[in-house]
Image (cartoon, rainbow, N blue to C red; front, top):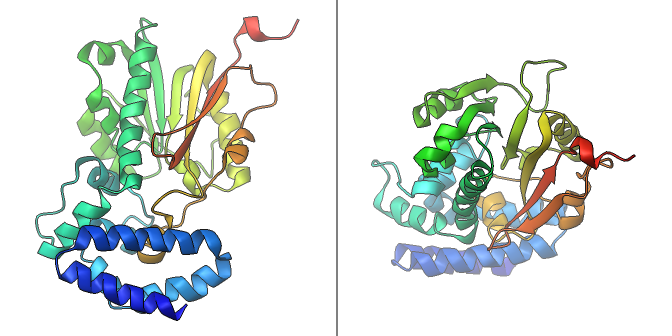
Length: 304
């Protein structure tokens, strides 16, 4: 893997020389190729170590998006502040000049495009559901700042009778109410689900980020628990990044951001055995994220 050092030398020179878009794009593609082709141990012990020992690592940490993931000020990467970076592409004003240039490239990547599409997609689903119902009861799991609500039409927001924001990060929940003061905050850890609570009867539940951090048993348990909170005919949407997502190599090497990635077959495993045939599996336009949309059985769907 000695050739990687030479490649990183070139990428660093290009970034410093102003060709940051080409350098970071090519470097990300190269790292993704390494990640896909190497065993986990060789990737971690060879490629990742070389990346973090090379001077380009410190250069890339000037990007507030990359450095926040690596430093994890909330204890985990991919927090709501990072989502804001991806959604709105506004770096902190005290970022260095080169940090802002790197930030621009990273937040314009296909992975960031998938994050922005995800927000728009959720808003679109809520709009369509509202067009068929007088009232809606919705829950967002690992909700972030609920920025998708900002994309809704005023008449759609009026139809949302209840919106529960579910997250373990209390600071995130506090800021979520700035999006919509009527949000009901529910601080809860998806890895320690309560045996009883007062929340059920939802028409739509969506979880667009937390499955990326759950093992199979945790994800299965959460899916069953969430399905039980739906009204008959209610819908649950689950999103997960895929193993061949475009930015995987860069994320793991320079951001210390490792996700639990899932294939089409692994997502299908979350479909409850007793579910109705109303399930749908699909990718986003960039094929970085896979979605599973489940519908809870209504009485008419129950066998004889």
